[in-house]
Length: 589
Image 1 (cartoon, one colour):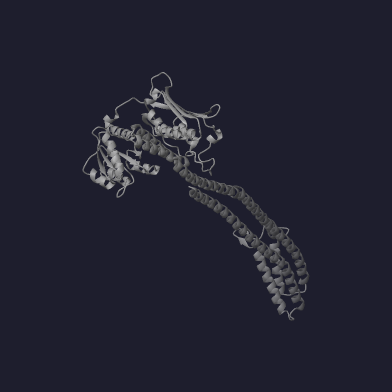
Image 2 (cartoon, rainbow, N blue to C red):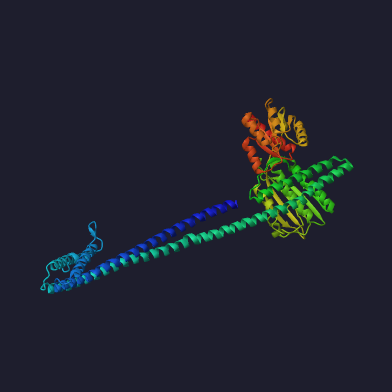
């Protein structure tokens, strides 16, 4: 479970981290691209301004070379003529660069520069063309009278070129300024995105990681506590199961000495109490896994249910020298439907605490069944039970402690330590109540109340007469015991020691019901049920009899086609009720 949470956490945070990384990468790419573009524009702007400034120098240089050619006439002016020609060519090429066009638009001119080059008062384009034409004509036909005009025109052109340089510088500065503002905007956007990532990605990620780590630590501590609790519970269970076992052995010893049949009956009741304690282990597993136990309601006499607890703890009280008394009213002899095993366990826990914590004096049990009101109704009954002792009393906070929560390191095993938590849980499911009252001058009285459903007396065995049963059980002792139970119910049975043998028998004979164990050699019960339903295509009811109390195992068996189930050890009354139930359903179909 925690591994799945960790995998989901890693996947979620990896996605968030990748999103943040992609955003930062895009922002870095955009900023880098803008910076490179800005540098390119600055380089281009420097070149434009440099060329615009060169035009001023070339215009004056060309004029000087021409004046020298005119003054010197034919004397050693070849070099100056070449210099003049070069200056005019460069002046023209620079002019063409500055007036470069991209479609209909000029690349290096804004609106103000466009007016300065092509409109008055500047009209710089025509001035340059006329000036270069004037210099070319004067160079071909030198005349001293032209010197003054060339000088005047060069000075006027120089002023206009100076203005053009200023306009180019202003245009370039404006363009670079806009790019820098854009770069600043990108930086602010990056800062905003970084802050946004910190607030909406990294801070939540940090909180989630911290929360996940805390949950994982809690899960780890919970698992460690559960393992510790299970280990302690097994130790306590080993100790506590010896109580009814001691009663069984004690009554059997008394029977061997006196041969009184009553001791066998008491030993049987103590064994039933032992079975109830084993069932409590399953409830503990469910409580540890935060699952709610399921009630197993069936009809039985309350005197038999109460007798299981009385048989166990009357002997213990006798060994401690305590006076033990009990009283049942006449209605307790009748048959009522409830979860008798768990009711017996709860009463046993109350008696267990009363006997163990009372060093001298009295422990008493009083039980009665009463009608809630005068109307005749099968649900109009309620069971009341009081367990009193003359012990030292108790601290309510200790009684309310959760299972194994108090004194975790103690070795004084008082019961299975499921305590009030399990009692209250079971009684809540059964719609019952449990209250404790302090007795004067000392001692405790536990008051228990549970609703019951009254059932009429009936001869249930008649519904099973002449039914044929296939018993699939690998343990020979268990098989013999169950066969004797079936025989006492006037049922005929055939025994198969494993699933494969059962399949062979079913291929040649038909049965009214199949009793199936799950864990067997050669072919287990799961595969046998599957073969019966899918290969043999039989709809014969299958009652699972198993000591495997795993919820997953029972679920698998039911999904494969089992009709119902009982856990071992199986009582004859429970087996009879289960057979009546599934056979009646089969007859209805």
